[in-house]
Image (cartoon, rainbow, N blue to C red; front, side, top):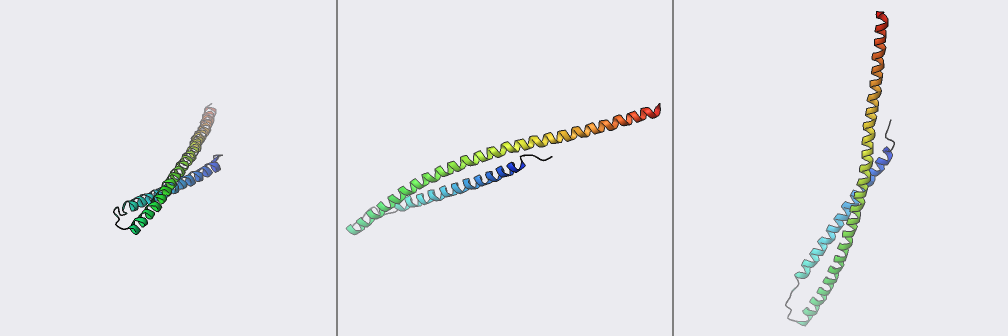
Length: 141
């Protein structure tokens, strides 16, 4: 006798693996964006502070404005990636929970199957022993 929910167990296993992969991808995306944000912040920090001529001052102001704008966008993107990762983690936890529930059912089913098979074997052995005892009693009489 086979576990009647075996196909569902395989589907849930696949869903859990997909959710784990999506979580891994979301975490990698978040790390990549946070790395870009840190590099952008470091790049802005390296800009000159003392400017002696007007053209350099205007160029520096434009570079800083563009840099801060890009940094702000990276902050927003990093926050979006963190939220994506949180959603992926919640989906993975739910997929694991669903899988574990079915695995426990399967484990219980297998244990019950073994118990039933052993009980049937014991009944058969008992019947054989009773039949032998009856034959011995009949031949002794």
